[in-house]
Length: 271
Image 1 (tube, helix red, strand yellow):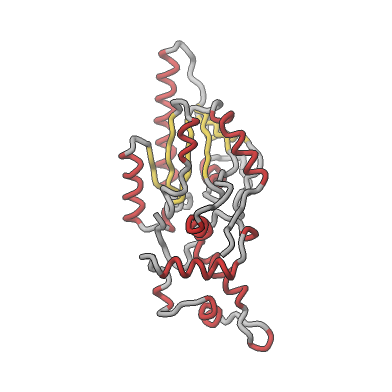
Image 2: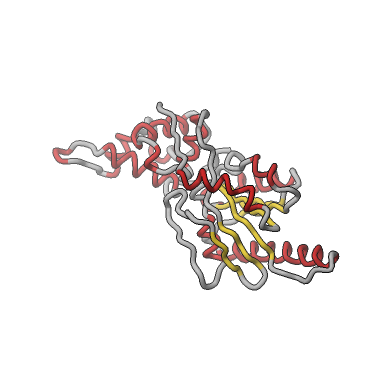
């Protein structure tokens, strides 16, 4: 299979600006996908923090396995990294996050007071792989101004500040991603969680690679379809047909990938 390779120019530029942007904030929030909570973390970010606070957010918990979410939240905490697991569609999770941000603001206020500096807003930066839910999170937190969102990886193109309440200012930055996938299995996992654009790969070949990967793992999402699942079988089940009753394999592959990443075929964990 040809290596998936997706690295839009705007994301390359954003990664170069990352180091400068970190200097502007008090807290770096790194969003990871709860289905891929370790592999979707970028270690090089830690090297740029310069003693800045960091909070790991495991997002899309509704698409992952609850036991795994708890396990990997504890994994980060055991490494002395603050971590919280949320789903941006769950209001109570957003409330929990706001409480967490309030604590960081209180910590900043105390720190500034010791230096004789008046209180100010907590400045936050959100980073993560494409389509991780950064803009969706901001839209859940902010009251008035909305940030453009979409289901295409890297939709947040420009850097922008967003005020969240009276005490938090958030710098939204485009997702960052490794430029080349020498590890094709990692690329397949990114396709499965929706972090690689459809234009970066051939759907049918990729769908078959995904099925092959799932079959040799402990992921259960295909069990509902019985034995010998294939894109052809999926097309028959969904009645995807071309003229002459020929199976529409292309549509079947694209639909399979989309429904898998959207959680319509069930929850799973990849780490």
